[in-house]
Image (cartoon, rainbow, N blue to C red; front, side, top):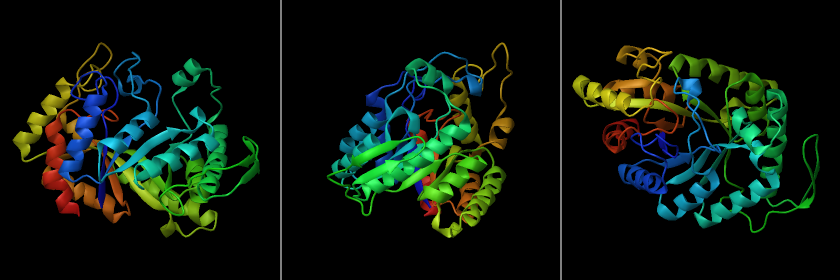
Length: 337
């Protein structure tokens, strides 16, 4: 199993502090030193924590692609990935060009996760129509085909339902051959069908329980069968919230720190929500002593997950404290290699 780290690039994401390039770069370099295989950045113009109980305040965010490009210069070994690009924010011919260039600049260290988009407020703010989920996923499928064909060197004439290109090219091409891997990110049946048709791999984020992932894994296999694809050829990765401690006392200390550094309403009480106990938290995350976490992540490995992208908090792309990065590198990654 390989390990990626979801980098803290939103307000409140790193120990409750505002978003900053200094923080992202520092955590990425710390992850590289700790033995992580990759780092990942998500793609939002801004984000709020309302769906997690943290209120509707819009949180600042570093832009995904610019941050990935800077990470290529700030790191040496790790792969750099998007989890996930919002397809509707960029034209796929432009995305292919961006991928090829970043793959050259990073000497072949790019993974591209792409999704259909889900956060309606940023669509409204940017003046982009927020179409039905079915339409957005269909558009994603067309975009994935365009990106792949351009990265493989084709001079592309394409006339689909959602995109039309007439002689698009992507030169120079990427370092990785035939191209960097393309991951489709999501959980629903239509999205799994799209992944089975066009993607190199499928990402499930975020794991709330191993059983939930197992059910969607079966659905992914069935989607492959329906389109005539060997399920073994669809690579699998998963994003997982992870909180580990050396022993029960250390776990309790780290959880208390996480609660303190997470916005009200997510773990701490608010006027509308009560506090989340440790037992409630661990029931829906990969959490416990390092031995317990290794056992849980090992179950994901047994289910075919080749890479787990670790979120070290209660919110996406949160790192409650930098020492949590070190503990995963010292006690969890070696055990599952």
